[in-house]
Image (cartoon, rainbow, N blue to C red; front, top):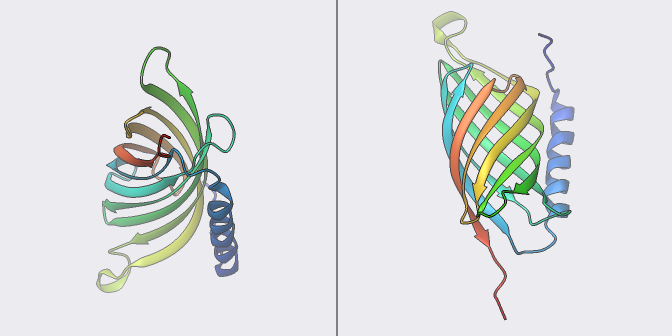
Length: 169
């Protein structure tokens, strides 16, 4: 497996692109929301928590969903900044929707117990994430994330998105 490590200048460019996309993405206030999730990861085996912001529709059923996750355990701490886009497909006759998406991620990896006296090593990497999930219109969701690079190989999570809805006239 080839490693791709971001240099300090490249990391700054990625952060600026993330911030620009975040600012430009929020057009309408309705259906936007802040969400929280938790779950477990495989390879490495960890507990994961995180949050995200979901925009209203950029195009029909297409949303921008940046997020920040932290995973802990197995002598590794992993923080990821996810730059995801998701596409929702309503399930006929119900209040649920299937969604899929993905995007790039910036990963901050800290490994403990390396070297003399149990010191730690911290590095910055790039990865990609593929997301598959089901969401209820009340905000509850469950999802799988498949990662490449230094992202966890598989992440299962559940969460809730607090939605801002426009007032009805």
